[in-house]
Length: 340
Ligand SMILES: O=P(O)(O)OC[C@H]1O[C@](O)(COP(=O)(O)O)[C@@H](O)[C@@H]1O
Ligand SMILES: [Mg+2]
Ligand SMILES: [Mg+2]
Image (cartoon, rainbow, N blue to C red; front, top):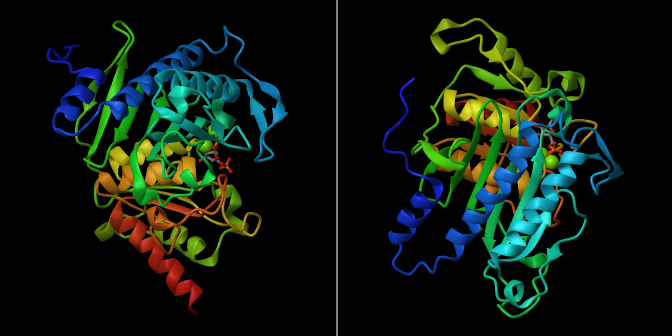
């Protein structure tokens, strides 16, 4: 095993990137640094989950009506603390909290950014040692510094994100993010406790051979999606079909695999969930920003996810993301099927 000699840590990368923006004031850099700290704290608990008290249900339900897992609450708490301590965050919208969390102190009131997060993604996989993640998105607030932030600071189109990313707690722990200037991946080196640049300038293949959808929902799926699944399963060597079906059940892990290898992830609306399951602000928008920055595509089956104007903090949307040609093909099936 040869180790890379010239490792660049996340902090070194952030500082180098900041230097490319003469007017940058360092606030976003400090925020990204504190996201790194919170990710390491959550990673430490995930790595020894069976030995520390983070497995199993927490006992409460969140605003989504889901049973909160202990690790959901653990991650939520530690990200909130790290972001409060950064002094660069005015408020947070989190999957685990009904309302926005406002940092009503001098630092918070004068902070420039607001933060959206899914502190622990893939909760159904926590207790069974399958990859899970954290997803985040950062916006510049629209309310003035000095004032108390409001929900309006969060109900911005995804195109307004200044940064977005995810952490995947898998066989290795990685942080993947964008500030609108390409996508870079950092692997946590436990021996030095630092995220190090391992996947510079990630580009996703235009086409792939993997489709990811929970086929357990098949009977409730829209007709166009059923047809697209059949298309993925048909034999046609010219178009690399049949594709391979892969579904982990953690959005971060399913998306990350397809990002690197090429593929499509679909969580559509179903007859049971007319708006699908995944949340626009802290799941779909950040993943869509990454997908597009890597040359991929992200839609609700019809329009760009990033162009959807949110109307509520925990709003759900149908989600189609991954290799651009595959998402386009799925949209064509939806369009055709909706118009017959
Ligand atoms: O079990 P299902 O219906 O396939 O849903 C799986 C999806 O739900 C999620 O677990 C929802 O996210 P949370 O775990 O953060 O609530 C996604 O990670 C995943 O893609
Ligand atoms: Mg999630
Ligand atoms: Mg979650």
